[in-house]
Image (cartoon, rainbow, N blue to C red):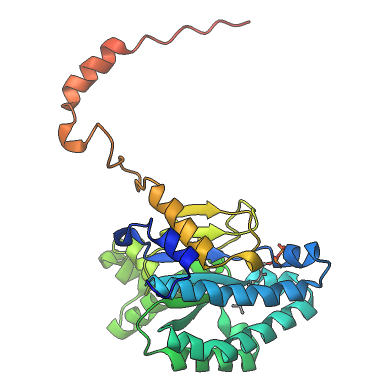
Length: 297
Ligand code: FPP
């Protein structure tokens, strides 16, 4: 890991390389506050935020993180922010892509996008397409920018896609959708079917979700995919976030005990050493005291 800075290396050395997350998602928040603290206009916070993006992406690629997904522009940002700010963010995205594709290639990073990107300005879409094609052969970190993205809309789009596919299949087979549902299509609609219809179909679910600037909410980001993600919230504002902070978040993640609804690996009640149910029931029955009768006051 000689490409990491000495400070980053010091944190990296404490990590277990076999337990680096597969996928980290980040809600980049606090650009406006960063600018406000310095009596600067909000757009300068976004500009500084774009620099943080590149620092973090390069550290991610140096530690061979397979997937990094960044919440760059939400559907709500598009609808609720002043037009001038939206237009600045679009220009910033375009210049970020033009200015960084070479660095992406030097770092073996592949560009990808999720969201209703077809509603973004045409020239931005063209630059996005160009950046994706220019980095398509890279095999390192996949950097996914969520643009004009909303998680509920993603689920709506997934359901629409499933229904459209079903209608097409009925048409091809010359039967009705009802016939297909009766013939087992309803039973075969399961969690993997939904996952495969989401924008993130080709990626594993995030193991770690980071949010900067201290807010404790998910803001309609990857709602389905983060079912078992660990959440790391830092007060640091996004324009101050660097690769070393990504490594610190991973160190925190590695200290967590992920259970996915099961028992901890360290639990002294491992499945194979559990008492037979009947024995346990007798033990519990003798230990449980009968419920007290409630008296009216
Ligand atoms: C939140 O800050 C951040 C955004 C709305 C957009 C994120 C954009 C960037 C990091 C820069 C551009 C990104 C790329 C990929 C070029 P905020 O304005 O909500 O901050 P505040 O909550 O402090 O007001």
